[in-house]
Image (cartoon, rainbow, N blue to C red; front, side, top):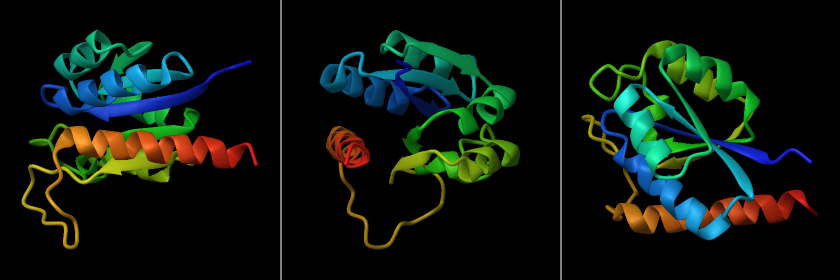
Length: 143
């Protein structure tokens, strides 16, 4: 049986994506196939080092893979065109947004965007919340 696929998308240094992958692997083991999609090779390498099953880099990789996975996880910047200092292109954000995959978005941004009603929660706590949400989504699909 084919495993459920999760795309973890990040850019710049890949630190957020790497943290997500490490914690997902710690909690879920090999239950999911985790695909690291980096906007640049440094981000992809960081996520692969964190334990992603496979990875790819750049606009075409994100456009090609986004519709093929069941979940997409990353910081809010992955749905904001031209974020991450321009690394996240409009085509990338459109492919991610239009994908039928369930999106688990962490409210972390370095852009001049302010999220009202969202507290400044540290990354490890957000990843723990993402794990709980993913677990609930997977449990719900079995019903």
